[in-house]
Length: 143
Image 1 (cartoon, rainbow, N blue to C red):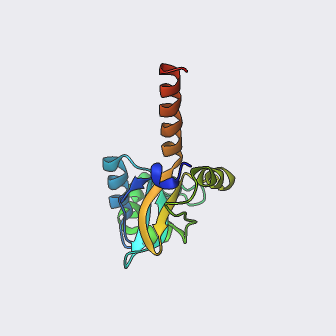
Image 2: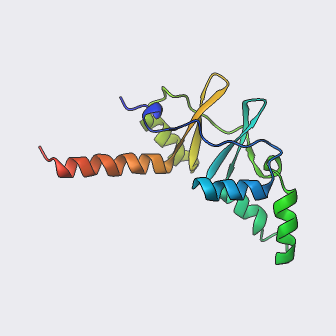
């Protein structure tokens, strides 16, 4: 049976609660990722997504000028915009179960933990890549 460990990204990039929004944006761009687990004392305490970043920078509730973006990006930290206590899975979780969770909760990713240790992250993109690869193989080698 396909498990989360077969699809996940091992040892993903992480940040701390004190990480500035500027560094988060730079890390997401340089690493090409949309989700960053937040660790405090090596324990998972939250997750910051590209959507969280967009909500801070483009909030329809808080009107501000573009000149204030520099202040926001330097002063806002991961702790203030993260989703605390994210739902997690373990490496042995069946992949179909993780896919159900992503669909039900409309999440883009699930942190993967063993005990209290973050060991990976599984994303919707991981599932799409797996499906595309398996279908490509199936079409190239019909039986």
